[in-house]
Image 1 (cartoon, helix red, strand yellow):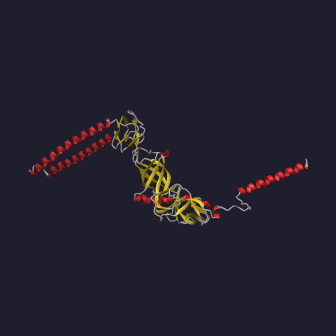
Image 2 (cartoon, rainbow, N blue to C red):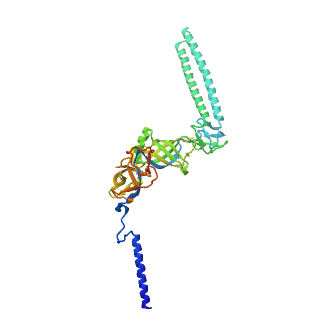
Image 3 (tube, rainbow, N blue to C red):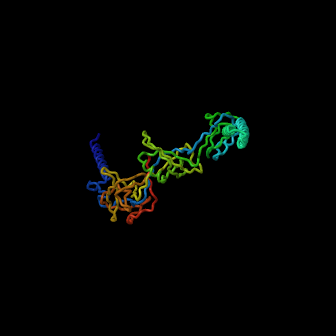
Length: 404
């Protein structure tokens, strides 16, 4: 190859490499002298941030869990005598009232037994009446000295024996009526009838044949597990009657509000949880036994808590800090202690209500850096306006959700 041509190629390569190096240096922020360009904070230029005022409000610590809907009462209806179904008075899925007639059994044998016991009672009542007349006559004859005292005593014994027989007859009649009553099966309480397992003519046996199951739908209960660490708060809410429980229906179908009703008497050692139950009004049949729903229980309310966005808290090797902005628009690092944090809010100590807390742009800040407020959205954003003396906010209470 021609030496002059080789020289031109080498020169061109050197020129291209120099141009690329210069462009790369500018991309890295180097200045004309090769030194790195100063950042906004280092050069004294204000750092663009958005701030939110710390708020004082009641903060609800809420437990979130998955609960199972259970009926407060569910009864399997069974016959108490061996018999045959003669009539079914309800339909499947029907709502019945307490005392409503459900089934009728063949009662002919028991009706005969009642009539027999009634006849025996009437016979013995007649014998008792005759014995009482004999006793009265014997007393009259004793007064006239026509009979001895022993005759009167015998009549008295006859009357008392016959009274015992009458009492026995009355008990036998009552027992026969009880047996007859077993042939009319009524609802022990209000509820919804499930599947009916018998038909007219079906033979049934006591304790083995389930005729139908009645389940109470309104009110209804939701059971779930509560972590052991929240047991004390749950017991206090139960005793005071302030245990508010919210059931979150699946597929965005809304929520229902109920009350805590029951806390179990022992903690499950395998899971470290205790079973609790809440009761809900269910007139619209929104909750159904066996279904699963989300549950939220307010276990504690922190009064007059200082609430800041959780995004404003910076976790460092020496603890948590937030950046606050003073009246001269200077940033200051403030050590804080996080008391409770969940969702988008955090309860902290170390910040006064009304102070401006940096949310966006905190990663570019240094203590003492000048800041410039940019437009911010969301609750508490104030556009950089000065604090109003830390007045309490009218925002509704926040909630901390703790998943067991």
